[in-house]
Length: 545
Image (cartoon, rainbow, N blue to C red; front, side, top):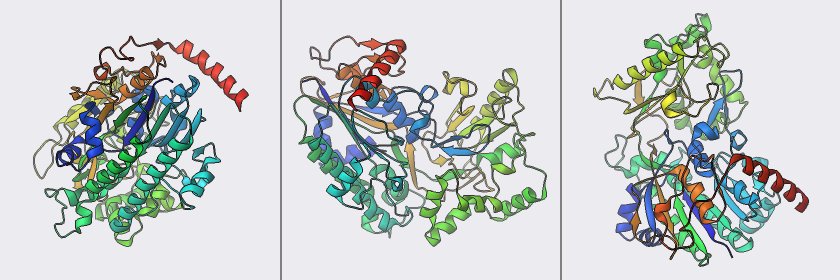
């Protein structure tokens, strides 16, 4: 029997929380894995967003090669955004490569994996997935099996409003249990060479409950229930128990990897960077009565930050979030009639604009944007450098401190990207992630900086990685660092499947025990061979089906 690999993903996990808990003996199963194997901080993508990071893990490629940068992308020939999906992925994921190599796979709850792939095994997609459509499993008949086994209300994604803290905490407890039940059921009932499951509690709860855990957070409430203060750590404790149960199902030929897509930390402020672009003259609004009315209302308080606070008070944020991820939304259409939006931008006079999550500015480029007029080449580069220089100097008016610690132009951030690719021309972020820019809040507040109305915690760059397999993985070792794109080629190497040369990641040979079965040269395959193999495997799969 060949080498098997099990990956346990913990979305948003960070050693900053895990290490103190492990030292106290609170995560015994995870501690055993880390102590008896090799561990490392796992660096996330440049902007640590789950869709980009999990896709970089799955493909072994950077975002400018796999094509996923955010939860949304610009709709072709439009300035509007539409949700991203696995259909936008430009290169094959790990489970497809393994399937073509004849390996049996079980893939559970990996973010941005909907629509599901037709794998050699079973697959259940992760967030965001429209579970109500009932098409998020492969084969589709798997869903009935899971409902019969786990319950008719089976789901892996929360349906409760995140701002109802009591109910949301109960919901995420249920989700963790469902992921565990799904994982153990499929590991017991399916033949597999590669299995992967993802627990999402630390990420989902971190966004909402970080202020309760962090006594130094400006929105910390010392009178909050103890359950809220312990919510994030309790999620880790529940996952540790789940890990213990999962590890009982593996044999001696299984290499266990544990990883997260990014870390987590406190979030204090929301930044409306389009206000700065307007102030500097890079962004212009339309000179028409409707836009002037919305701009006046915007300054008077009719804006998205205040709308969200109102929706939160009325318990409507969950419904709004569901609508926001739909391509067509009557609710969002109605809201946009009264609120200043990107539809109010005068594109024929605008040089640059910001949209999306994390800190992204696009130049209104001729030939790329529908009404772009900035010429590619010299003018494009000049505006990128000019805006980047201004962002580096931008300070928080209340503290005098620099807001963005990291600023990159497109050529530095995404050197492999084509000019028409839907990625930012200028990327900027605060590496501490105290300041955040979020989708839906392109015109969030008339202030440059305001209290973030939605989250109290957010993603950081420092994810986790651990590898364990006696006799194969070095024991008690810590790597200086690893990249999230390195996991896929490492898995392929362990499983004796050639690594595509197109992958940006490298095999993490620092984990390998000298003299073990995987202590060998990396077997690579070029794009042409991979394409031929893909066609042959597709033909073979059709015959089997």
